[in-house]
Length: 327
Length: 245
Image 1 (cartoon, rainbow over the protein chains, first blue to last red):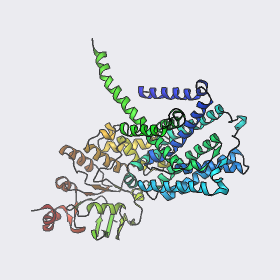
Image 2: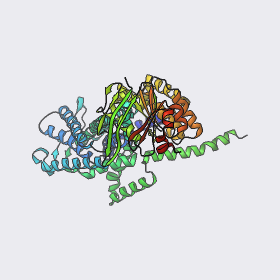
Image 3: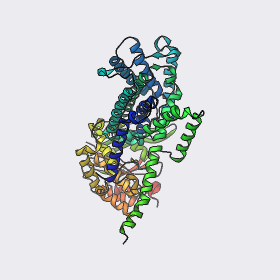
Image 4: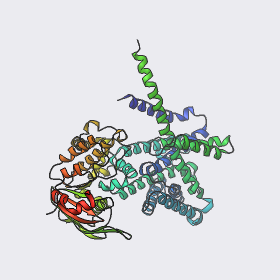
């Protein structure tokens, strides 16, 4: 194992240990809830990153899918079904909705794809507002109780955090496996050279379609976590601003990286929930941060920081070598 | 049976007829050179043969099988591979990763979402063997961004060879190469066994004439001369539209 690899493994161990012990050292329920939000939005951003980062397809309608899964959970619970059935149906509805999204939007790439996903997201938002018998309209749907799998109640903040953490870690592992797999490599190939991939024998449309389904599944997972976290779902969750927000998480952190969307989710959620308590114009601050990222680190925070780190260590290396060689 | 038979192939972009009733009959193992001035429709002809463009009329047969309506993505599975005039590679990846993508294109493993691509043992072996054929095995792990133009041309050829094609279409493989790089690419091409039929577009007549057995001259989308090297070079029409006096 080389030194970069050992450093990476060490960093992962420290990060997982910090997350696993967070309720012990993080003061108060409020901050534990903020951590839960960061994790569930990180899952959402990782789902979107499958398309934006690895397939080169920018979606502006993912909040619609996120909301559909959340509504499906809430509606099933309202009908009297148990949590297991509700979650399974929500996952199915989320993936099926993404399949419809994909069939309609994969007719195009680039700006065409963005506009079709935006339109589909707006349709779902409109349905959430107007189909009152199903969605409750502006009043939304309440989820009175969180589940208690194997008697482990998720009603308190700490237990909910640990459950979210387990789901988050599972998603990260699944993503790490996927991006290293042949299908992951093929997906990146369709992002970089779709014409060439076609000439090499790949079915570019089918690869993108599967990527959409995978993205839809992760988005549905995050939507379910969200509805259990807030115990409420309303049309605002499906709004264009929510789609833009999660897209900014991906772009700010670094699309096409595993860590980028997680860092982006942390940044947005912290500014939105914590910093907004101290700064009235937090939107302005968030905007300024994004402008700074785009100017200084156009690839995103994670690739930008990695590049700076490499530059710094490369500059230091010859100096160290000289010192070692000196008499 | 012909390796590749093109009959009365035509294609127009609006009012511009870029391919006009082109017919080719290429025997198995043949080395065929397609020449012609800029805008003669050589690359369009390749794009029609590989299915990247749909012909308005005419037919294409690969070893007797009509592939005129076969989607372009399925043609590599039938034994057709190509390289591009403008190098089209995966710039963010290593050389071996580029070749692995070519191999995966024909393997069912491309749908595998679990196993690490580096653990596809037999594919990695085949990829290294393809790189060995073009003399790049020693730098297989090098990122493509750190390679020279000539090395990238050879990666293109390695990707095509990795797919074990029966018919290989080379679009200007010597374009933009230095004398040394040209020699390297020429060596790679000469080493390709006879069970691979090669159709090549090339402007560099020194290397191309040495390589080709039969030559087709295209002009304004039409075949105006076809024959052996000597026949085509000696034809006054060739001198008039292409070689000059």
